[in-house]
Image (cartoon, rainbow, N blue to C red; front, top):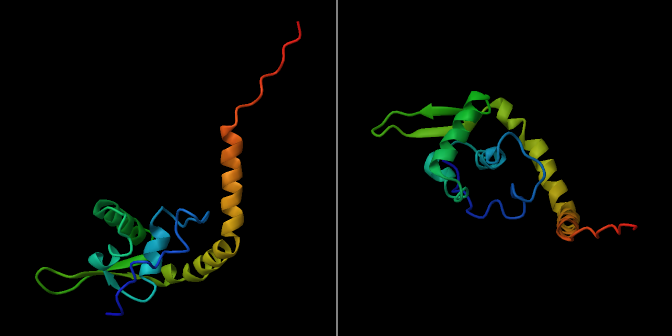
Amino acid sequence: MSQPLDPEMFTGCSHTASPFRIGGKWTAQIIRCLEAGPRRFSELEIPLRSITPKVLTETLRAMERDALITRTVHAGVPAPVTYELTPLGLTLLAPMAACCAWAAEHLPTLLDARGAHKERASVPEPEESVAQ
């Protein structure tokens, strides 16, 4: 196995700040976790600590269905299972890196725009005067 995953690997490029999503909410983060090679479920749970096991399982199944990852059951009791990016899944790494670079460069502007929009939305519209 490769080096352990960094629990803080999504600091600076999270799904909540980025306007880009590949598939579901967690798909891009799982792809990043599998970037360096196969991982076990328990390894994925470390940096994805806010995902429930049920949602992680559902997302992994959907990614396997879409041919983004492969699921391999190894010999043993209990049988270890690993997840790995397929050649198709690997093609997403370059666009995702570009999205993260874009977000890093433009995140302050994006967040300012969101804040300004929220302020505008919370200010009540002035009532129109009715001529009598």
